Length: 615
Image (cartoon, rainbow, N blue to C red; front, side, top):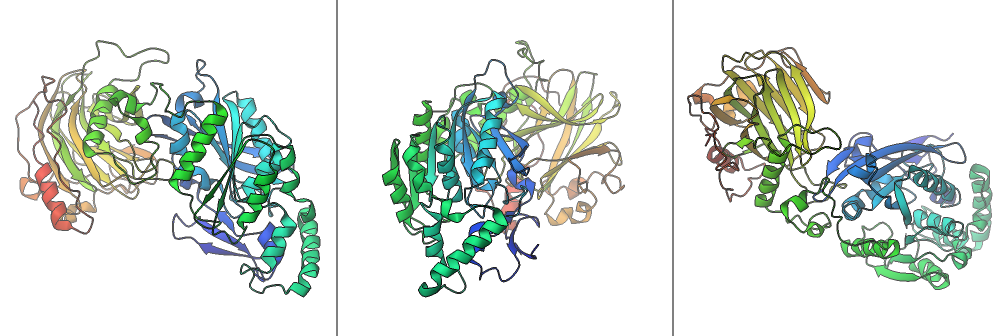
């Protein structure tokens, strides 16, 4: 086996790289066909296994399939949470299978998640054999890839969760879809981006293109192609003369949208134009600006989604289900939120209102499956809203007065823009609180409280305790502690978050609790420099609990009033009693300070901190 060279990519971690065969790579025509650069990646690039969009909660199901040659295919299926969890009352929904390019992987499909999932259309993507993290050494530009696709189609039909199946392929993926379509007429629709019509024709064009370090002279072309054909047959077991998608389109009747970039010099546009003319099914052609690898315009992606909606005969508006539909809870137009791939346009006030609604709905423990929350459940109390920036520390004194009481912090964070979630992300609301049986961390959702971590201990109900909350970025980590050297709960969040965070004091009102003083400190502030190193979350585990920090040191002592960068006011056992002003103070219309503007950051931190007074 030949040696390999790896090129580290700028984005991602050490496992994100392009893998090249050994030299002389650039001199071999067959490498452009069967062994282009291989995209390796860390699995964390796929994002969390469950996350929220404005109109739906998404669950990612990873599966390993075995193709007809005995190779493992790495696959991911993004579904609405209710469908993924197997609700018996939910009907199967359409699915689109994304088929990536020759030097790519399933990461290519992630930006389509926020376009399809709100419509109730799931998205399935996988690494072809010889690509990404799947098994295999070589690719075949569609010849064997159609068998990989057939394995995925068979798997999806056996799950009972999908109805119509659509194919969205680009380059090699588009050729794979065409080669599969004439043998599976049950496919609902296809988007075919930049396919070639004949591999020998393409090989002849590549041999005299800039993609080879040394162009093949025209008088040597036939000999070079013959050598390449024999080499590919010996390595991969297929004949490039037989890879002719133009011979398959005459037997295909599936609705198809053909797409090609006007500036494509790798597979020239005349390939797609020839296929479009010969195609027998309902067809559309869309020429776009850009070359072979250019990101496609947002307008084209939306047009492709609407094309699938017509092919599947389903509504192009978001589903009306209540499970995970935060936008429906707020009475918002979900199409303008989840369906946007442009600049974010979600206001701070909308994020705060969504966070408040989640805090109220998620403060109740989740009811058993199939039942609804009790109508008489107590409405939680939220103190004044505090605007802070990562990293920060909050210190407050509280007393849990009876065994049912739960009190602490309600934290509203906004996940950072991502490929799988888009730009306009809904907030994530966490409840970090103390109870008689220890420290708890939970996620607030419209279905109730979802427990994340629990540090067990018996808390004295007769005396106040010091509660310390810390949040730090990169990765976003939360630390909740009681007293000095006491109980500690640590947890790594599933996604990176924006630096701006909103915090409330919180009481579930299931029992009696008292709040005393509370102060916030910017951990990038000079006053925090001496204690910052002693309170970091060093654990690499998703969550950990104990009686000290991960390296064995005890928690830092509480800061004096002079050391609380933003100041604090002492109070004498304030007890939440009414629902008035439960959403805290009005939103402060204040620009977020940039990371390099320490003066603006300090001013914003000073304005929003201080005593969290109850109503």
